[in-house]
Length: 157
Image (cartoon, rainbow, N blue to C red; front, side, top):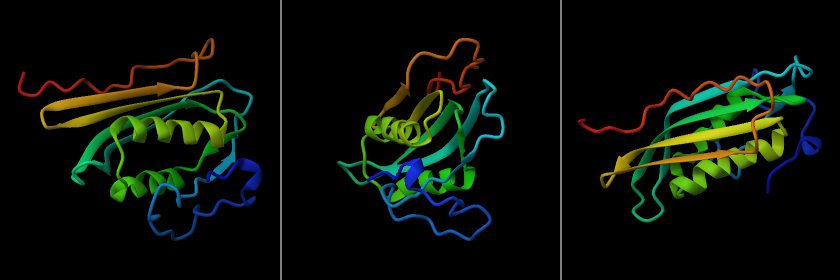
């Protein structure tokens, strides 16, 4: 069950403290802090080029380059808690689609940004790369949204 902003303590749980890697995404707590530029329309990008989860069928590791873009509302996600949340997937079984969309939806539901998108660029296993994209809705008017900068998998060609 996800915590919502109103359920969270006033002080971040991870910022400035030693924190262990959560055992699962469900146990991970994301910290949010007040947006210092709440009235401005701008975009934040997080890139996780070494994201790992497990294939639910084989148990083998799956690797992806994740790119998370969002236009903050009243809060921003604290980067250390995001890193711990993403790291908690290393022993989590999930299909590429479920993992990618689930990360985007959890961040959107908890942080309540003006807009969010996630690109999951999964490295091939079994010869087929899978790229998964999700966004919360239309891009807000006037928001600069650069390309995510991850090229489609080309193999040897």
